[in-house]
Structures are given as C-alpha cells and as structure tokens.
Amino acid sequence: MATITLTAKELKNRTGDAFRAIGRGDRVVLTRRGKALAVIVPLAEGEELPDLPPYAEAWAEIEAALASSAPAFASLDEAMARSRRRA
Image 1 (tube, rainbow, N blue to C red):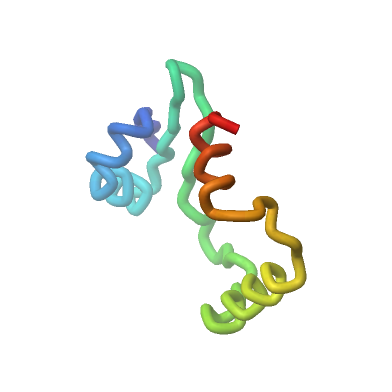
Image 2: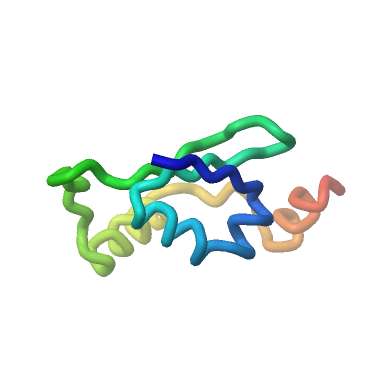
C-alpha cells in the first residue's frame, strides 16, 4: 500500500488521481501547512458503511431542525456584517 500526500489545493486539482489511488488500495494523506490533517483509506474487504437516510428524509430532518430553532441574527444585513467582522 502506497501513501500519497496532498494539500487541499492539490486535492482540488487532482481529485481523480486521489480516487484512482484509493481504488488501487493506496492511502491519501491530506495536509495543511505541512502537517498531516486527515487520511483517506479504502474500505477493508467486505467492510460496509452505515446506512444513510434517503436524501429527501435527511433534508426533511434539516428543515425541521431549522424551523424549530431561533435565527441567530435579526436580519440578513446583520448576518452579513457579522460574517465580515463589522458587527
């Protein structure tokens, strides 16, 4: 098993290479500022991921959570000012 190291920018530009490497059984190490941040590894033989809910069901859960929570900002302008650190 080989190890390939990529920065976020390299991953963006070489996603296909990363997928091909994983398909061959290689590990892909993602780095930020020269330090390892995460490792993408192929699934082990016979390993399965937990079942994920269908898209419509997951989206309905997200919408329900949003509907039941109070907005963090009184207006879009307030949110934009905060995101631009002007608040």
